[in-house]
Length: 119
Image (cartoon, rainbow, N blue to C red; front, side, top):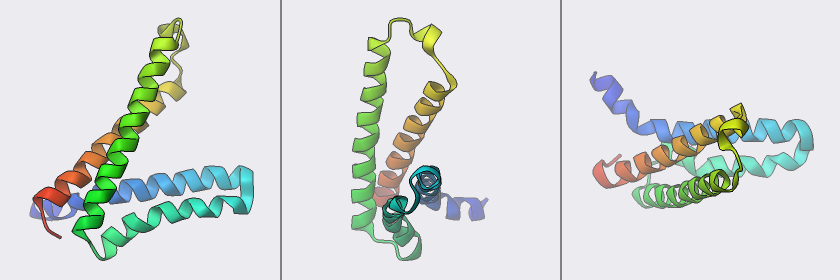
């Protein structure tokens, strides 16, 4: 159990690295070489895994919490503007909600790590 507790603090960083890699793969299939700047987004999270920094950790958490909050507001606005949400709920909107909520939870987890524990 202590092994699991020791490595759970790295889950949010791995999550954002995996999301960046998936985003890069999807864009690379259609756009080609212009998708490579997307990989720059994974560098701070990779840096946190290699050499943790409390200030970078807190700023990453706050930044992605704000972005996730904006995405939640955008999804809620889309629901309000939808004429019949029940009929128009597709798999993409469900996956979108899962993605947005996962981003928000991981950002809060990063903030919790930066406040609660030291690397």
